[in-house]
Image (cartoon, rainbow, N blue to C red):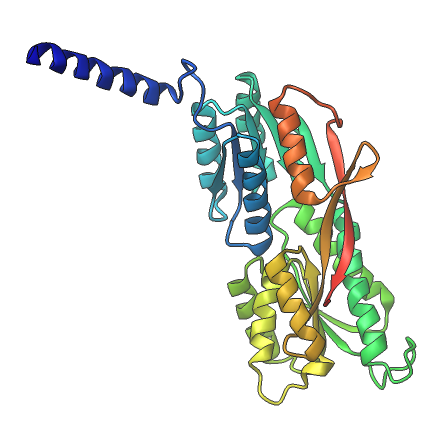
Length: 328
């Protein structure tokens, strides 16, 4: 009897191992339904978005796994390869290097995996979700111009400056979309013609980089009134540096950028009382799906769920709506 019990136990263990190896009880399905690959989840915007999409998937019984590439293009491809090996049904990718992504996306598609690319056009995808990056940059600059007119100009007109206010631009240009947004900022503020524009030679995408670039720029540009950053993470670092400068009139300093999340909004809200100088950012509201405006996190999940169900209900190219966000 004891020998029979041991035999039965071993059979159960072996059966359990086979189920685990196959990824589920369906004889070959993946343990993950949607693989979500992003550059860096410590970025407040990406952390918020990926977390929200994962929660919405869980509510529907879909398993979403987030892969943080640590801003490494090589690591991102490795993580996507791993998702392919896991036989996920859908991939969501925010590419670090869009010029090196076509091969791995085509490999996924050849195995029946649907691919949503967001933020940067790779040229290969099932669904592309993006915004007008150049216009985003223009609107970042517009926020800065409006602030200068309302705060620095003596009479609220473009001719009301005692001297041209100095504006520092901190760009980021590692992808085409980043180039387009950065160029939108630089072109708009330069074409305005009423500012002394200084473009930092070093670039920033993270808060740490933003702090370091601003620290260097401040040595010869401490008379600046405005800083325009490619993204909110860099702006957070700039804000931290400026708030630590003794003697700086915080009411006469402003930082504007792109990208939004709840933590970023909290910092901007502090600017109403000059406890921060990060005063505004461009928020991706989300696209219109079937004529209705949908919040970005819900829209992203809706598109992924649609691909998971084998559909292409909303088309293959989706353009996000953007808006200016300020302190509440």
